[in-house]
Image (tube, rainbow, N blue to C red):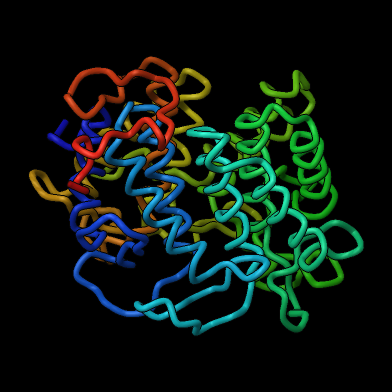
Length: 390
């Protein structure tokens, strides 16, 4: 494996942060992609906070924690308006002021990860306030998340439902408050009722605004990456709640993806395809980076050696040796089809790497190259000489 193996991910993040954040100590956003300028999205900024706080805490890395706090400071100052707004200019001036459900998921996940770092600096009341906005403005009468706080659209997407489940589980893990676990259970019930195809067990990408299946290609779309991601979350819920019932749903999702959604042979052998139809026929035979991380973290969670294969593909094929660079998509021959080093992608890699660390497949290292402390680093304990702010 290359120098960008899972065990070097914390060091890679430190190097990337020094390029993606302007120098200084005050609130600042990360770039949307290395080498690019333009608007800043809530999705990218909140995912950056999640990534930096999560890896910083588990790797025992004060520099990453400090970076997470800088980005969160920008989000709080320029993007938070009840919920987070979609985009702002580089200077923080509002642009797209919609408050999208998808973005709120990552805003809540960011607060949960920061609460896990230091519950005094980021108290549970901040999580409560954001959830209060979601509950009042974005949940319909059935409990399904609307796409945003604007006019009703003709579809509902599974993606916000899934990432809200992720954020709620993280909030429960951080706070120990059972109300978050109860809310997570409601997300699973909604998914089973409306988004899971009973014929195959696979998750539908889109349903109608009336919560019924959609006709045509949009309604038939199935993404292997999301089957793996949902399965990982359902097993995680089962572990936290002591309730094995959702594991049956997870196993059917994984079976659908393993059977129909993975390339067999060639340089990308084992990589999930980008999309299938409802019958499992491949409709997009390319390979975005993120589905590999979702398959990998499920395999790691289950103790499946296929996790190592995902790590090899990710760090040998998508990351540039000796550089702070990754690509977003390859074809089946390993040729780059989308070369942007998007700043929203390390979030996916981070959870795969830390899931593998938890499973004992590799070790997430700390800032000195040695295994991290595996405990909380409160912002108040970060010394000035330990960060770039001196």
